[in-house]
Length: 299
Image (cartoon, rainbow, N blue to C red; front, top):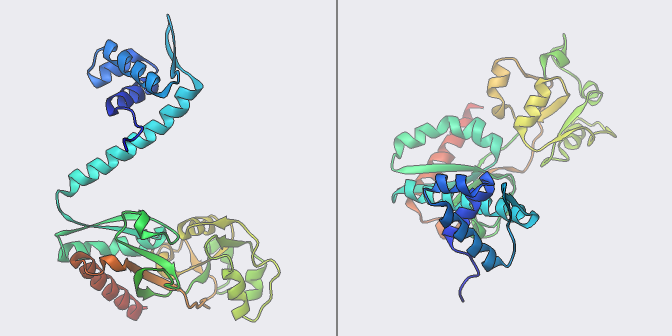
């Protein structure tokens, strides 16, 4: 069945005219005549049976329907352009589209990725932030790195490392002390991680302490946000040390208590079963598992 979609030329003409609110400027941008732009807009309005512009002697102005439609059309055209440039850029290359939890990707994976590129120059690894599981069939991802229990239907899992977060804060908050006791930590503002809502409760429980306010405090989705909040004296946070190595080395953050929170959850590389035979994915898997194992031994 034929799709109910206007011509691409009409959509491009409309997007340019809507952005400039001028047929003349749209014609100049697209190297067309003003008459051609007018005809494309008119054909689009006829196709939609909706008026997109109000014409007057002073020029044109978007209607409410035109403004709403222009925003959606611009978003879709941008997406088509990105996909087109991506395909053009690949030129038949071996490309891995990897979904990765943000702070792990920027703080741990990226500093090591050059080693993989040197060993496998024929493979390109693209990274996209994803904080939660998804259906591989609904995306273009070839694999994912996420934190959880490896219960992800239709995938092959490879454990990388545990998290083992510790209480960290700014040197100002620590003051003249070397270590804060769990009771002292309980009196400070507790910075919460959105995807680890019970982290502080579990940490206090491991120290045999019941803290009624253990789930209160500002919530942040990313560890990088938690680190920034802690560095600005907003409270104390539970963060895996390997994600804040630079901040610790530069003393912008300090470990307030060396007791780590252990968990059965871990960082995993997840590969959909239909992709496990990919040579480039196998090479990346072997390299990543080796890197993670080496780091765990160092720790």
